[in-house]
Length: 532
Image (cartoon, rainbow, N blue to C red):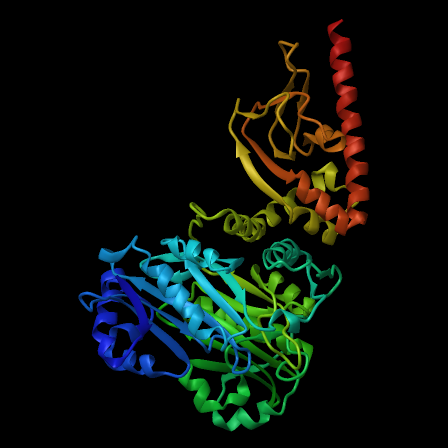
């Protein structure tokens, strides 16, 4: 029989041994290998540490914790983490028992609970979903153990958390699909307002950058914007906690000066073991310092600290900051309703991620809801690589005719790029049609069942599958690559959503599709006429 109880100092050696048996010496939190640090964790008021014990032998066979200081001091956000079961006792329901007891112990102390489920051990994802945690994000390559690993982010709400939620967030288009999924998973009606026109913070400005010292603390504390007013970034630490508390949390600020005067600062935590940086506060007197500080920090992450992953929690009501981060290479990875607490409400938060190391990102074995969220997240990361290629080809693509640079980027953002080899079938006559294709490079033969020879050719810059888009029917012909072909692929559902948000783009697309289809029909007619 297995029972669960709160850990005591006597359990410290057993907890350490469980982590060694599960992770070797690779676990990123050093406290679990140091008896003195682990003892402090056992008795900390800011965390709950449980152990699972085999009643007959008294052996500790599993452990789990809740970190009650994930959010800022008054946010009441906790992370259900560090669940480890001795390998000899897995598949015996120990993880489920630990999760249930954690919920029982902390549900009156939290308003939001978070779980980060590892891709390497997806039982934690299934346990979380079975306990009413819902998927709100996918953090690609967020955790470094033996190699970088992705995490599924889940949330559960307690008390009046959702009653305090601030509604009608203002988000940029890149966040829309993810926010829609997350809100529905949380049983909330999607109420986001898509802001297509919010400008990014301007580049430029000349500032001297230095680390915060006690000398600059008072001057920075007097700046309200970004700290107590117009807060656009949230995190577990804040400047007014004090210099010594910040240092204890491994936190740092880079401050920007102009003519000796402090103009702003960016606060962040740096994990040298996990090679990650988390931005938690950005304070500024004027617009120019915002992008300057973010850019300088991102440069240090790449060139000085060899960081692989940078994350920032952005207010879902701050489209300018969201747009700025997207332009800098950050992408939305999670949308968490009511995560922070600010003034008198709980605003939604967009977790935005900048990947500075390249690795294959897998989604094998995910549950259906986790897979849906992961697909939306990863599409944006793949799109970032697609945008330059489509932008390069856009001037020669009739589909993009008449679109300005901003409209081209919006259309390109819902495309993906793929390649076909010579004689490879792209689609077959009669198959269900859910995508339209734009030939970026190469030549495609179009054939029909009753004709032994191709009835037409589609060349660089032209479209395939547009008749099914216009008529909602299956493919009327078979498309086969004659040469190596590079394609931009546009899913009907994604295009419909884009046009719903941007009818100006839809008008130009349908005009261009009609013109292109007319040109292809003329060539087909000419081909048949030549055979008579």
